[in-house]
Length: 427
Image 1 (cartoon, one colour):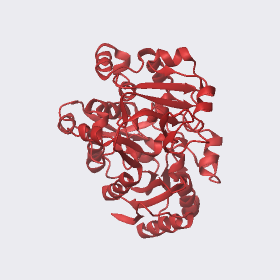
Image 2 (image 1 turned 90 degrees about the vertical axis):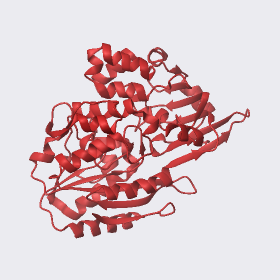
Image 3 (image 1 turned 180 degrees about the vertical axis):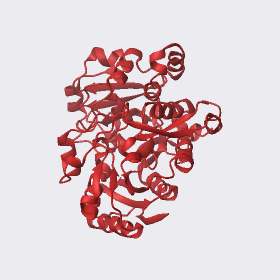
Image 4 (image 1 turned 30 degrees about the vertical axis):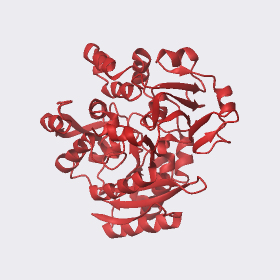
């Protein structure tokens, strides 16, 4: 059921309008005695989830007893990051999701179902895993907050992904990521109905229906001056809420291009992107827009590691970003990669399949480290001087020497595709 919905490609919601909409929805569901909030972490800072979580605290007061950021495999938020994103929310409310140890398994999605929805790509059963707080905490409301936006693993981010991946365990995260990679990222991105979503929907409907979850979805876009604005707010307890947010997100966040791009330059904000695990959104979100033989330049001043998880970082360094057939062969012949299928999926997602070049310009990683994982390297200072984010505008830019580039200031906020490439991905 949808309790509140507003949004359009031209809507601009003020903080007060967001607050009024949230409070209206919370009034409709009735009083609650113990509330858990599950917002995203700092990597989704611009989702406005921090603001909305503070508003929920204003509404419920001390009945909002816990805040569990949906880290997935990400590193725990620092106190400074919590302060930046959640402002006055007390630090003592925050809990850290330990994805390797602090989970319970509620049941499973049958392998026969997964084989069917993946068109035979995989046939394993999928465990429905969540942080134990969701089951053992005694909550009569779990408030799942986040942004709906095109996503490389599941098609469109949020809804039950925030629960089953954001607070999930090793096997669930690994297998869901690998399912998406095996099926084909370019057949998934920008689509609300995908094999991965079908598996999570099965979990919601048949395994975890007892969890009292209310979803709060934002859709974020840019106005005519390039400023981020809230285009939509959708609040409900089932998939209809997510589908309406997805419909708007595709209008706001998906840029379809008439021609492929020869050169794309992406800037990664240092506080948000510290690893290629996150920074490769620059590849995921632009790959269907880049011409064969083209180049993606990634300005990454905060880049200091490959994986935020130590074991995943080691695996990325060991295998590098290879083609899909090479990674699938490595999975078949190497136990460490078989035990970390999300790492294998990430290596597939981060591959250009030999079609275009990726040049990383990192703040901390060395030339040798970048090249060891099969990317090109360029020195950050010189590239930042040539492609100054302060001077560039999102979209096409002509450089002083006549070079044309397509600039993206934050790849996490959208999806770009050449019309013909997107059409081919549907075949």
